[in-house]
Length: 79
Image 1: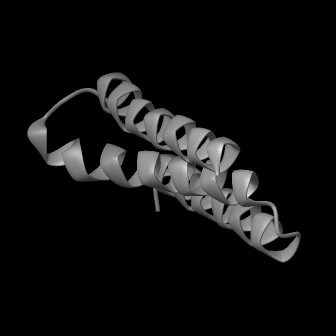
Image 2: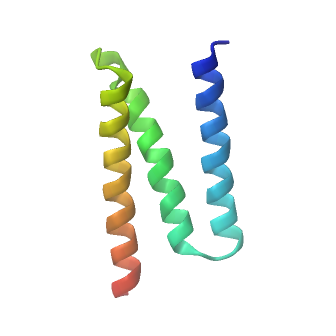
C-alpha cells in the first residue's frame, strides 16, 4: 500500500470522526463541515481519471467542498 493511499485512508477516518462528533453533539455546522470535507475527497478521487495533477484535483475537489460548506452554514443561519 502506497503512502498516498495510507494518507487518504487517514483523511477519511479523520473526516468521518468529525462527522460522528458533530452528529453526537447535535452541531449541524460541524456535520456540514465533515460533509464538505468528505465531498471534497470524493470529487478529488472521481476526477482522478481525467489525468489532472493531484494539486489541481485537490483545488477542484476541496473547492466544491468549500462551496457545499458555505451554502450549508448559510442555510442553517437563515432557518
